[in-house]
Length: 58
Length: 285
Ligand SMILES: Nc1ncnc2c1ncn2[C@@H]1O[C@H](COP(=O)(O)OP(=O)(O)OP(=O)(O)O)[C@@H](O)[C@H]1O
Image (tube, rainbow over all chains, first blue to last red; front, side, top):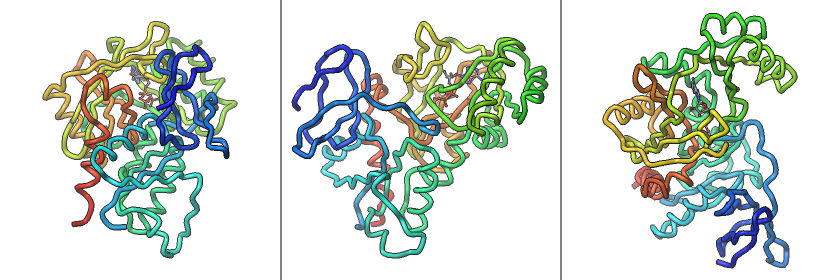
């Protein structure tokens, strides 16, 4: 699993090698949720998760 | 695709990743279906071929979950949890009525449809009380109403929101410790339980609000109550939330797509693995 950096606290964030586009990973240090964005080149970028919707939940 | 299991999702969270990893450990093929990439015909065309025989519904969106599950069920696919379970559990009023009807301890709840009537209801329920949206989760907009003044301010705020927030679901405030309990029910057993502790700066215990979890020993009382609650809604996978009140345990919510990312490390129980085992059992032999 290659490591990525959290945008907030720059801790190492693990991204599974078979991560899917849109998958949400969580910073182990600060708990920030980050979304995996796959570029057409296969490269991965982490973006902050957009706001939750009103009917989202458990 | 007889014999295999699928999973529907809209946001692939750590829970769904844990399910993917659990399937790998079991050498089980788990079909992944992004709900945003699908469209389904209400006619029974061959679309059931797109899915497995048993599908785990993990969509975060309540409305999507209910509609999508209904479409799949119409094609003969078994969905965990069913559309019936989702539609009732995803709406706090419908769920509370079911619990009450089954004589399961649940907080006193009153519903009103205008600010005026809500304030009257509050006089009856007494302060402090709790206001909750009937649809929603993670403690979002769950508000303690401490007195008439704060109740008015909060209710007035809701008047400008989406109409569902004007269904005023009002509950007596249970004098609980700064924690509540979630029991994980899979089929006929309670497989684990956690305490959810409120963070320092919030009254709510939701982990989405910064609360933390600790393992909780399942007492026979909790077990009996959680299983009774699950039975009311039908066989499935649940997170049954209860509070420790002066009069014993009381159930305030039954979650139908429960999260478990923090509960697995806290309890050491392989909740995703057990969920898959439950699904496998349902595959026609
Ligand atoms: N009647 C009540 N008295 C005291 N505390 C309550 C009451 N109802 C809910 N709470 C507390 O408020 C918080 C949010 O409540 P609840 O679980 O019903 O909301 P939710 O948004 O559906 O959250 P989730 O489904 O993610 O657990 C929890 O900490 C719960 O313990």
